[in-house]
Amino acid sequence: SSNLPPFPDPGNVLHYLTALGGLVAIPLILSKELCLQHDPLTQGHLISTIFFVSGICTVLQVLFGVRLPILQGGTFAFLTPSLAMLSLPNWRCPAWTQNASQVNATSPEFVEVWQSRMRELQGAIMVASCFQIFVGFSGLIGFLMRFIGPLTIAPTITLVALPLFNSAGDEAGSHWGISAMAIFFIVLFSQYLKNVPVPLPSYQGSRKCHFSKVLLGLAITWLICFALTVTNAFPSDPAVYGYLARTDIKGDVVSQAPWFRFPYPGQWGVPTISLAGIFGIIAGVISSMVESVGDYYACARLSGAPPPPKHAINRGIGVEGIGCLLAGAWGTGNGTTSYSENVGALGITRVGSRIVIIAGGCVLLVIGMFGKIGAVFASIPTPLIGGLLLVMFGIITAVGVSNLQYVDMNSSRNLFIFGFSVYAGLAIPHWVNKNSQVLETGIIQLDQVIRVLLTTGMFVGGFLAFILDNTIPGSQEERGLLAWKETCLEECDEMRVLEVYSLPFGIGTKFCTSSWVQYLPTCPKRPSVSKRKEEPKSLKQENCFKTSSEREPEIDIDTRI
Image (cartoon, rainbow, N blue to C red; front, side, top):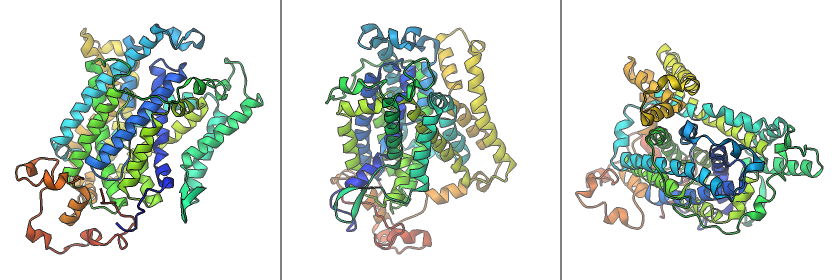
């Protein structure tokens, strides 16, 4: 498309690093349950690893997956079952790891404590990712979506973030003043001043670089914390409230970190497997898949592309499964998914280019090889992380609730299903955590599976919503299925769809043209000659036939690769 620059604008590449907050927050949240809260150097290695893997997965997704300009990164859907698994009695951190004076980060004993837990997470993620790969490349995701509607998706995504309020509150509570300041700046720049660009030096004439508003808010608060630390406004006694806001607590982590560190598969050892972890992560995989399908349609709409066909969705979910497999092998402690933040950024930056997102993925990959950068993020004061988590978890909760826009919320049926599912998804895990001995069967492996599943709120709430929505009588219109399908299944010119979603480098024309290959769920079915000559028959199709200069919004997907 002629309206796109021949090379990616570095400002747009930087804008796609708005996902940086999630990439940094996930390892820092996990570090407490991995017994790493007093080892910021290893936290920096985990951050670098998740950057590196996210870069690889982004490039794979854009080139061979759904083929839309959408970023890949860590997922909070895996975080809840991971924390539930690590809270099992046999994986709780020893008391001495909670005391900074007793932790020697280089001792073999301490290294084995945290690496054994990481290897357990790796094994569960890798096995669960095989399930996602099967669902994607077999085309099963299309069959499952017949039974999964807005009333199932809403409580599932909502309960990804709601149970994590303890983590956000504890981090922010280390100094509420600094956390409130971080929230103020994030809200100021991302909401009140969202249409006001922050200029940086540029070299492409009128095309200006713009910095991530979230990162700008964090950077300003970080500088204020540094000034208050230098002037000794914060207490220097670790036992006094407010000490964790100091910027010199982890000051030596940057100097200790290597300049270059290449993450590699198996860097923490050979992964181990347990049934409890696998079933818990599979619940996260299902939630992640459902959210990603919605992201695909939203991304296509905002980038001026036709709605993604089934074969593109199948490839997208399958490649996300491969991404989770790579994340497990590299040892990020998490999986990968499509980033909703990136989808929203499309409407702001007006850039629907695959090349820009591939460049952003390459930037993430390179950042992951610089150990100093990961160490810098690991040294962020605790209250700043708390403020960021409060904002992020609030947005994730709202994204879940927003799925109810398709549902008739004047219906007592729908009010009951959503309200009961969310409340049960909070109450049941809370009770199980306090009374797990009541559910013991005498079979250790079965007890662990039951406990992990019943303490994972999104599984409990999503499962109840799925059962109730598919068994309680209600029309498709009342359940929101009609509005959902109209949004997701708009018809478009088949040749335009092939142009956008066909595999690159001639693979789509060489591999998918064989008669038997066209029956594969990941390959498109070629339109007949008569269909190619048909004119658009509805207003819904009109947008698909406009040129890039006529289409609304005025951004167009880059079909050069």
